[in-house]
Image 1 (cartoon, rainbow, N blue to C red):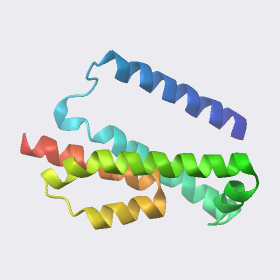
Image 2 (cartoon, rainbow, N blue to C red):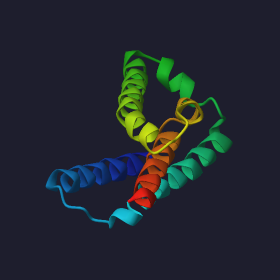
Image 3 (cartoon, helix red, strand yellow):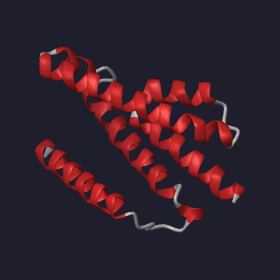
Image 4 (cartoon, rainbow, N blue to C red):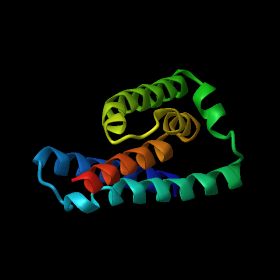
Amino acid sequence: MTTIFALAAGAAFLVAIVLIAGGRDMLPRASRWMAPAALSAAFAIYSTVAALLEGPTGFWPEHTRNLWGNQIWFDLLLAAGVACAAIAPRARTVGMSLLPWLLLVAATGSIGLCAMFARVLYLESAKA
């Protein structure tokens, strides 16, 4: 089951990359925030199930088991850091207080990052 989940997520990512590369807006500006909000909610549910079944710190042994585990941890931290740096100017422009959002990202990773991005998109559409 976990192999199927990983393959499905990889396929969804590749489809998203192709759509993004195509440059077409799939959603109207007013509802663009809904996609990252839905991803944040879905991943929060999946992560909650994982934490309940395997423990809230189950991710840590995976990242400290070997060099590949370290590499994945470093990769996630780099990706989250770059994404936060890219989103921060837009968040400031729409009046968001960065510290609570960045702490959410630090605590929850992609869950907080998707939620933060959804909020930025929502506030940008509300301004427009």
